[in-house]
Image (cartoon, rainbow, N blue to C red; front, side):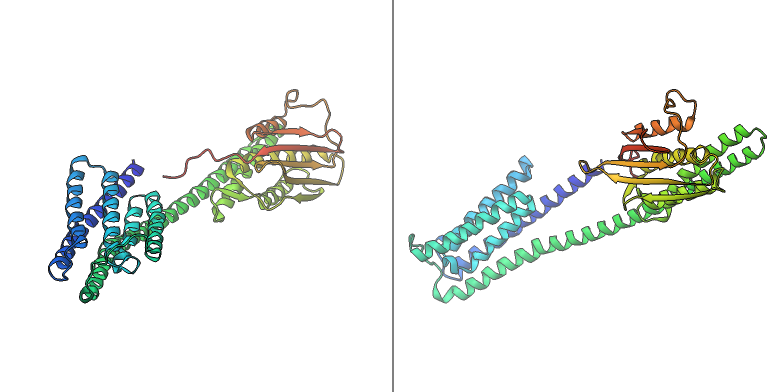
Length: 406
């Protein structure tokens, strides 16, 4: 609806401008013709070209009131102006005619309709000017200069006034009005963008606060039970919530509201998990090799949950009976695609049985790893040849599914 309204507004502006050009040029041509005929002693083709243009252009305006087609009126106006101007130029000095500048106005009139029309008239008129110059030099056609010597200065003055008035009163005024409208529109758009960015920041801030509230509720619930298994389940759920809260906090703090820098996010999430998961008393080295890439929120959240599951499993089970260990997280962009990535998550722990899979195990974490990889249009592959546990997650930076704020 808004696009249709803008289109109709532009069409209305073009119509008003072209009608104004037709009315003004017709009146000026009539006045110019009268002055040529009665005051400048120009009795032949030049004044009649002005009179003919006036009559045909008035008829063109009248016909537009009947058929209502802007394109038809624009074509007729351009052709009438072009033919009349060429005739006047040829019989008022050729390449030296002061009326030659009016051809430039015809180019502007063409651009008023469409850029295609403008380009067509631009190159056509350039060719016409070159042809007039060539014909004059070669003396192929003998066009008599009808302007008497005593009237040349007056004709040049009238031609300059004719051109400058049309340029200033019609096109110049319209350009200034259009510039003012574009500036006003630009200011309004910038204001709307700032308002929407502020709103989105506030949304991310509130989502982060709500997720932290959920985490606090889970923590309170965990303290109210003596069942260690339930406590572990609640703690795992709490970490998953925090992994999402960190993303919304980063979006709130940064200027980019749709993408986050992935490396800082992984560093913050990994540090939090090492401190929070049981076994944090162990000496765990963290090796993060991630380039400076930004990923969309619909990609970062599943990846954050996926990293949460793998690191949590490593901390809980991978270093059993050991006081130290190493966890590595790396990201590579595949060379054959702009959207495919490979995330490597590994540890040098004891690993787990080769017979354990997402289909056979009852572990929610292992099932989540594979489900989240599929959500990212990829897959999770466990490398059986490595010491400890190593996962290769192939994924795409999926486009956002949420529509922008209207």
